[in-house]
Image (cartoon, rainbow, N blue to C red; front, side):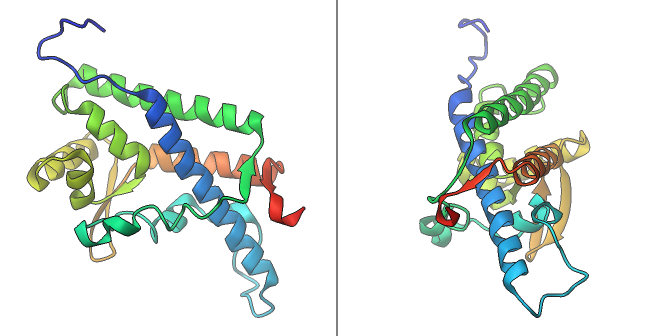
Length: 204
């Protein structure tokens, strides 16, 4: 990409995007693992409910943790899925996860550049937000990308119109789902939990 592009384009820090996204994915896998252990240990659990870790979907996990950011909740941001310090994945899984995440966001960035759905100077801020929030609200995007809510709403509606996101109403407001990102998380979770790629040091 030329340094002399006009209008000037923001540098895309894919390292930051990968690290943020991997943190989210591993956090979701941890929650799936924890929920499954809780289900197995509950003698009153519904026998028709989930019986394996990967029965839970990323959407089910993230509906309770994302799309809720507001000013008075900023101090608590991320704590719902950040409590997995005793939880890790194998190096091989980590590398493959990073490659999958990089591919996803490179394709999304390429699409944004080619179609110019959002200003080129703001695409980096949009990508950073989407990396951290597979489910995002208008206010959440506005605060994360530091744009007006009307701008955030326009961006999200454009992404929905171009089939890059879907819109659902839950939690008392419209939430925007990055469906390809959620599918990526589900795929990685099935691989991790189904092939014992997950390492829980507390169980050792």
